Each structure stands twice: as C-alpha cells, then as structure tokens.
Length: 550
Image 1 (cartoon, one colour):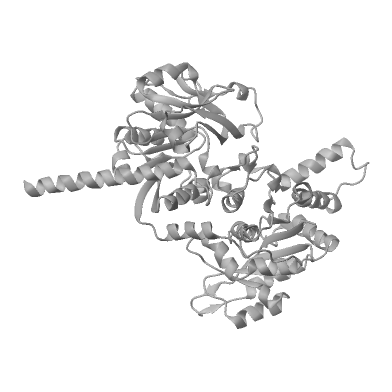
Image 2: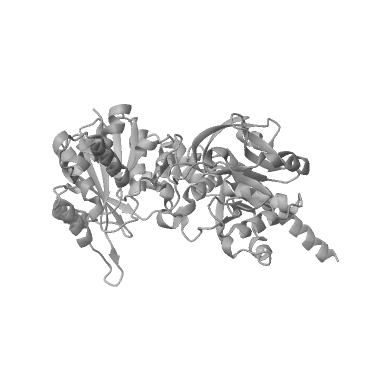
C-alpha cells in the first residue's frame, strides 16, 4: 500500500517547503523506495501559465507539457526523475472539475459544497499518483501557510485522509520557524506553538516538526517544542540555514528525518542512503578551482525565482567544470547602446533569458550585438534566441526594420513570427507550444558535439518561431540553423560560425538540468566562459609585458 506524507508550512511563507519535501524524497529514494512529490497550490488560477513572473516566479514546464509551479523543478533536480501534469494541482483546477461535474448532472441535483464535494476531489487528486503509479511513498506539498483562508479545504482533506487511512499510512510534516531575537540572544518557540495550535483547531496535528532556524536548537528547547506541540522529541527536526539548498538533504539525513518518517509509517528502513554522487557534486560546488562571471540579461532580474531553473542549471554546470559561476543580473530595460560596453565589458559570458512582451527588448538586442562582435560566449534561450535572429538581421543582413511580430505586428521584416497553429487561438492559458519535442541536429554542428548526439528532445514554451522565409539569407551570412523539428520544419537551434560560442535555442534546456545530469549546453557554456576568461587574461598579460619592455 502506498504511504502518504504531507508537508505543510506555518508562521510565514518562503520557509522552503519545496526544498524540505525534495530533500526528504531524495533520502527515501536513496534508501531504495520509489518516491514522487506533488504540489497543491491554493490559488484560483487553473495553472501558473498566465501568472506574471513577479507574482509567482518562473513557470516550470514538464515533459508532458504542463505549466506548473517552480517547485516541480526542485523535485526533478533532486530526484532526477520527470514529473507530470498530475504532480501540480491548484484550487482553480479543483473547482473547475467540480463545477463541470455539476453542470453534467453528476451530483444528481444535490447542493454542491466545499465539504464534501471540494474536499472529496482534493482527496481523489492526492491519492491519484499512488493508485496509478504504485509508488511506495507519495509526498504532497501544500502551498500557502496554515491559517490562510484558501488553505482550509486542503487541511480538512488531509484531516479526513488521516482518519480514513490511519496514522501508519498518512503522515504530516510541518515546517515552521524558530526566530532568533538578537537583542535578547534567544530562540523563540511561541510562533511555532501558535502555528501548531492553529492547525489543531482544524482537527489536524503534525507528526513531525521541521524547524527553520538561524541558530542551533539545544536539547531543552527541542523538549519544550515537543511538549507544547504534542510531538515526540525525536520528531523535532533542526533545519539550520544552509550555504546551498543542495546541502539540505545531508542535513536532514543528519537529523534522521527520513528514519523518523519511516518509523512512524511502520516501514522498513531499507538501505543506508546512497548519496555518493550527490556528495561529489557538493564537494565540487564548495571547492571550485576557478571562477567566471556570467551576465544574465533579463526583464525580471529583481526576482531571482523568475529565472530559477537557469540559475540552478548554471550551478550544476559550474560544479561539473569545478568552477564557481557568479551571475551578474543586468536589467535589459536599462541597457542601451551607450551603456552596453560599460556594463558588459568585464563579463566572461552573456546569457539572454526568456520572456514575453516588448519591454526591455532593445536592451537584449544591444547585448547580443556586443557579444557577437566582441566574441564573448553567448547563450540565448527562447526569446533570447529570437532576439539573436533579430539582431543578426538588422546588423549583418542589413534589414533595419527586422523584428518579431510579437513586438511589432506591422513589420514587413518579421524574421520571427507566430506559428500557424497559434493564430486561431484566443484562450491564453495552456495553449502555447508546450512540452517535449524532438529535434534533429546537424551532425557536424558545435551543438551536436556538445550533446554527443544528433537526436535530442527538449521542452518548449512559446508561440513565436523563426520565419523560414529568411532561412537561406541567414545561412549564407553565417548564422546556421543547426537544429530543426523534422515534423514541422521549425528551427530550434542556431549557431554562428567563427565564434567561440554563439548558440540560440528555441526550447528551454534549463528545465532538464539536474544535479546528477547537468545539461550539456550549460556545461559547454560555462566551459566556454572559462576559456574566454583565460584568453582575456593572457592578452592582458602580454599587453602588460609589452608596456614593461617599452
């Protein structure tokens, strides 16, 4: 029988429920248990696909084309296994299903209510993965904070499941905060007590408490928390602030979180966690032999979560190269022809990030022009690839009005245009070209060498594509379409001849980068940044020596 673990949060948001859930899943997986994680979000949106990045961070895309919460990216990066549409459920999706069923007459004229109809649908979704995929353990992260009005149906659904399935089959891990008051030099347990009290008012008590803290929890404090929160003392877990999110699984193993959960679920402990590769990765991450600076040119750089998968992919690639990657965020809206040299001249590489809309577009074009002309390693993702094509058309092909029809619908030089199948679509949510598609690379291309294969599959999220009417012009001038989807003939990858590293991809390679399998394009990009830095240092040394001789 599948066992279920629910991860809830209290006191405040942004404590790291997703990281704790992923860390616990990693430990259970390392012990030999088949494990997956799902996220239930309390907002009314059907999915995060139409949410502004400033509101919600990045929208993560799964293999099957689901637009999901960014925490699913953490799940995949930790477990090295794919998630799907079934791993992310929102209140909007729950209500939509129930309302549709009511319209169909499925409830036989009964009054449709939050209890039992909404909670029954929540429970059905919570159990779905375990019933269909036969996992040993399913971990469910509940979004929001205990006490939020919108979270109440989820708390009630978990309460009912615990009653129906029994404590040995259903476990609640509650993540909470133990703040440290510097003036008093004390850790305070009262916020945690209130959070547990609030949960208990709704009939649910946690089985395990994971306590985020800046200072270690001493024994008497753990005993106090256990006493007033009605949990066993060994179930009070210390979660100290970590130097990297990738050290959290080892910290949770040290605190025996996996062992405590397995014991409470009456399950065998299995093997000792096999984390050799994880530890090797951490060792390389903590003790790099070099350092590079990469400029991230984007529109949402004020919020790090907007480019979460890209930042994590750079960390994975940096560790693979035994290199610390320092990311310098550069807002494209404030990048101009006059400032581009000043802001970009000391970078080892430039990455132009995805996005939508016209704001900040010209800054991206200016950055790409600088990278192309100065031979700085360049990586363009989705919109970054499209703007690389626009820049090339304007400054190499002499097409002064070249643009994407997304930003300029009236241009007669639309080198980027909307895909035919997208033109009739009026609904915004979940209607882009989404999910995994095949791509065939030219065997003699740089990108094929990076992948080590000419046949790849990558995840997409876009409506606009390269306009094939201009294909020959680009190829003759040196920007080569080295990757295509053979079924649609859409251009997926471009690269420039006679450039150390100039790659644009229509897809999102960052989604498939994990700790154990860093994405080859990011690995090659960081490697190119190291080579560019070495060449620049050598040139500076020679220049200095010439001045000394003179």
